[in-house]
Length: 300
Image (cartoon, rainbow, N blue to C red):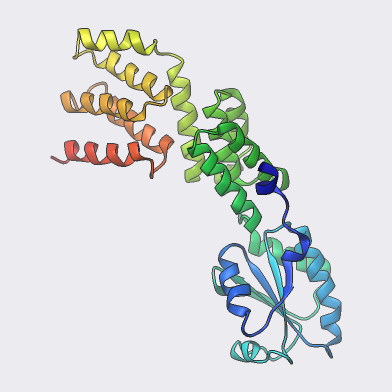
């Protein structure tokens, strides 16, 4: 099954001819997944015949980060006419449904590669997007090992992919491989260290490491039952419960501390709860409910 998800896209899917009728689907809609280069050409154009194989080679080398769509302006003059294409070969890059960049003439291979690198910088290809989505779904369903394998598949082709690195670190945390998660996060490019997905993975790692320093859930529950005002025991219980996957219960105890003493230990309970929210993700049910309940206390 994993091979079906992770298998490479057939090379021919990266390059195709289009028509006036097919332009919306082949270019506009497809460019919302990854950049699409449109090569406007004609049979009589000598430079076009020089450029096209160079474009095809460079697009194949980009491994799904960009697609190439070719349009014969003699057979399909409407679109190039609307775009004001007066000289060919002309290559226009579409990103998120809009023209984003382009060039005229038969550029050498090195310049074509530079152009593609510029428009695909920090972008996932369509295939990589599908893999990351499948990995996120697997992780959410509790299949951390499968998720790790899918993230690793993305990293095989793009070792600096921030979504894949952050996702792999979260999957490693979920399996208890904390040292490996640290190593994975260390591979994140420095310029992307503040990325939201990286911050969430880092928070998940810190929370998991915290859990190693607290006692068993049963003992902590007894302490809290014996003295409901023992905020440190309740705090430790919340950390232990989170490590056991009981997010809602963990949030309950931290919110209880905030209710009883908002400023306890320099606002420690609220800060821990915010870190939980970051580690769990903004759409997690425990995050949504916890934020609502915390706000009702803080802004009452």
